[in-house]
Image (cartoon, rainbow, N blue to C red):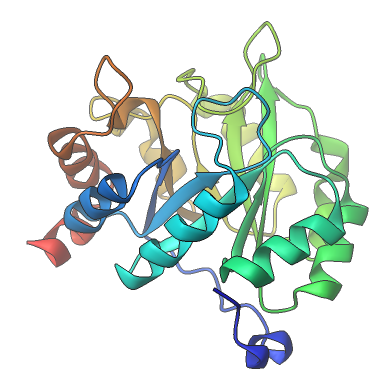
Length: 243
């Protein structure tokens, strides 16, 4: 599937609040489940070495096309830092959202912004023991063309992405004065800790939640009941829309 040529001259749409993203879909059945339970965004992994949901390029393209047909917005979640490769992937799959989930630079964001003016560029900010590892570069990322930040945890042993480790709301609030760009909240979100983050989700830059671990059963598979409960807890309006 190739992105329409008209997209090349189209600026990214404003990032609206109220998103729920479920990350790590692996099959068409996963996408059908998500389309039935309320999330607006689905994370598709590619270029995540050793990741349990990492997809080959052909599989990524198939799932991206399926997601679009089902009314979901596919998000490329990647550790890649090659702008040529990322731009080719975006154009060949029709994916408009790119989540840079490792330690890519502001220069890469600027390069992608020039190549893909229509894309929504998401940069993850990693918090380790309360300290944002990219704190000194947040404004550089914004100047480079970042549309959305995603706040997530780093484990003590350095793992990033889908760790199920919660963020401390106080650490999030300490970072927010540095941001002028909307953000998604990640890091161990589940159906029982929504109220813990009430002051974060009330912030005017809050754009939604990103969930992976809590959407799965003990075998690692997405379940209808789990995603339904998460949608109800984090974005009940999305749940109403699918009822």
